[in-house]
Structures are given as structure tokens and as C-alpha cells.
Length: 427
Image 1: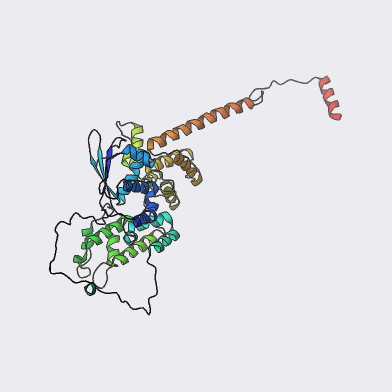
Image 2: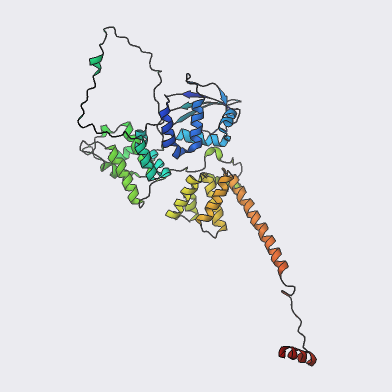
């Protein structure tokens, strides 16, 4: 997929591909916002507001008007749009021309139950809000329990209330009627599922019971828990019920327990793997600087730090620091790489947490988004430190006694001078 630069003059229309209601707002704010952030949610709600209540397709707008309405920069809109696309709330279509035309298709958020059953989304939500808040969210969307003991259901059936006419009207023209449409998140298929299923005997697992839904779940579990084919095969074997069918709930639980055990109680985190494409620098030469920028932009912080550690995997402490920089400070991966490299160079190869977070705080306030911006601010800081050292050295030099570093000529005192000195000492 080719990335295209977005310009303020580029136009867009919004197409409503679903049925949106006020309950969607609760779901967006409580389930989606902790993962993709308020800027992405703001963009979604703004595109939603572009649709008149009686319209399925909005009028045409420019991205300049979108920038004005949201008070966002173009690069922030791009980043927010990518998050909406990745999480299944938006699809984007492009028609190139002297002025590019975009179509933004809006889709409904998942129902709370579907969301919380999705291992990737549920894990990302828990990582961002913490276990205590996560349990509050589950309680918010749960149906309250009422004791109906002693009550009798007296609801009537359809047939008891309505009669069916002999004149039956049918219509074949309902295929285009709007309904609640949702887009599932797409993950990279790292494993060969056919190979995994093939390793389980037919008498143990009913292969015909493996639906598209179960396949999708397996791919998501493999992605979020970073499982290889051998691990996954064993976990699936332990999740087959007495009917020789994979129990989805047991499989989720087994994968979660396995990961927690292997990683000493920690849960997986979801972060950008490397610098977003639209924030990368166009490299046109093979200079050392261009190669350095390319490395920062195309390497994940985990792999970059592993490389700086000469192949040794980062410690749990260092991994936690990376997550803070990427999630809490919202620094892009390429920017994190520059920060890590800079600190290692000026701090005797030590990653001191408070020192790094102080710089990260400054970079966040300075809205450092690209590798080039991060490198420039490092150069500026380094130059400022060099100037301070020069000034300090000059001041110290001026404060030295006039006799410092000079040879003193030795003279012998006369008998009269010695007598005067002894008299002073006696007094």
C-alpha cells in the first residue's frame, strides 16, 4: 500500500456504512478512547457530525476545514486516522488527482461483549487503564442482576397477538438497507494455521468445526501472545472439549495463563512497532546520516535496544521504560530510538530512568514527532552543553591566582630580614 501525502486542499466526503446511536458514544469513550486516545476519538466524532441526520453521505469538505474544526495539525489528523483504520472504525479510499479526493467510511464500534472477548482489544484496554479500572468498565456494561425467584413469566407469543394474512407481500429490494456494520481488526498472520491444525489427530479434533471465526481468534491470540506454532498446537490441544471442538473461552484462558506464567505475571502490551510511514524522511542518498535516519525509522525500539546491547535482550526494567515512552509519553518509535541512542552516548551507556523521562517530557511538550526533529534537538542540546563548558573553563581560568602555574624565583633572606621576622614571631 502506497502512502500519499495529505494536503489541506485535498477534499473528503463521509459515508455512513452503519447505524450510529448515542450508545456508540459510551462505547467509544469507555472502551476505545483508552487505546487510541482522545484525538482519534475526536476525529471520529467530527466525521460523524459531518453527516446530517437525514444523510448517508456528507457534503464535500476540505482537510483545511477539518483542521480548523478540530484544531489539529495535518500530521495529527493522519496519525488519528491510521488509529481509527487499524482498530476497525474507519475505512479510507483515495482518488488521486491535482487535488486528491478521499472517502471516509464510518463503521460502528464493537458491542461491549464482542470487544471484551477480543483478546487484542481486551489486553490493550487493560494495559492502558489498569486492572481496577478495567473491572469497573466491565461492571458498567454488565446487565444488572435482579432476583426473579417467585416470579412467573407471562409474556405472550407473536401468534397469540397477531394473525397472518393470506396476502403475503415480499420485496427483493432490501439488500441496500442500512444495518449495524462493524469491521474486524486485521492482524498479520505469522503462523501457518494449516500446519498447526495438521499436527492434531483427526480423532482428537473435528477439523470441520473450525470456522472462520475460530481461525480469526487463533490468529489474534498468536499475535497478542507472540506464540509460535509448537506452543499454539499444544494450547489448542488443551482447549478441545468432549465434543472434539475448540472451546474459545478455554483457549483464551489457556493462552493468557501460558503467557503470564512465561513472563512472570506480566501482560502483553500493544505499541507501534516502528515509525509510521507518513512521518518518515525521504532518503535520497547513501550517506552515513541517511543510513542512520533509516535505521531509527525502520527498527522497533525493542530491536534497536537489543542491537545496542550487542544482541542481548533488554531487561524487564528497560522494557518497562520503553513502554512508558511509547504509551505514556506517546513518543513515536523512531523518536524513542533517537532518545535511547542519545542517552547511551552522553550517559556512559546507562539508561537512567528519571534522566530519560525528563528529556521525554521536554520532547513531548516540544511536539517532537519525527526522527529528524529528534536528531536536531539532540544537536542543539549538545551544542549548548559545549558552549557552557567553554564558558565555565574560561571563568575558572580567570579565577586562578596570578602565580598559578608559574615558577617562583628563590631568594635568600639577609641576616637583618631574619632578625625582623623572628622579632615579629616573638610578639
